[in-house]
Image (cartoon, rainbow, N blue to C red):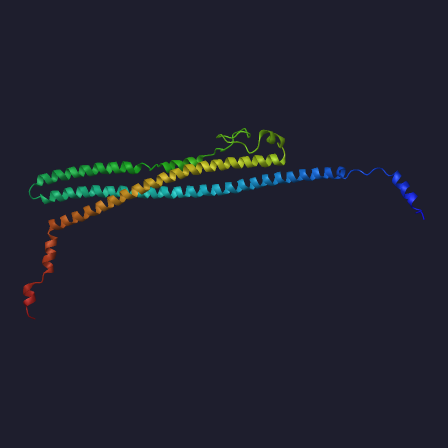
Length: 274
């Protein structure tokens, strides 16, 4: 038996237009998705670079502040060491004068005239020394580290980039090609890239100053180590000289004999019965 609806179905198919290919509907959607995906990737890369350079700037600035604080502490310590070294020098000069006086005292009974002439010469030398020390004290201690600290504090240079944003000072290269920079100029991406390059310029300036400060700190530490060794030698020498002069003074005054005599018991007192 024939299907009564078959003829109607054939007539319906005859009136329909051919179906469009599946790809004609899916291809535009695929292209749009790929473009959006790449835009998201570019946005994420720029944002990541911007955040990274921002964190790096904060870390470098903190390191620079710590370095400057360390430099100030070293400068103060160096001044104190200089004062100690200078005082020890004054003490050594005083011990030399004391030794001349002791030598004069040894022969004072033999030649009074010689004693007074040497004493006048010693006073003249002491006066000249005092003037020299006063002139040295009035001069501030200017070190390489202090000059470096002053120069860093006054440094307001932009760092890595010149006025032309597509060209970098110091032989480097921009983050993007000129063609790419022109294509994104005036857009959000262009603003983000400009900020990244500004951050890189700040980082370059911080790194340059940190390197300069590090070299100056190393030089100052070496100088202070040498100064500490010199202070130690002066202190040892001065201590030996003072001990020797104390022994000479003791012998001149005869106090060692008196002390020995006082230490011996009195024979009569010991034999005396109560």
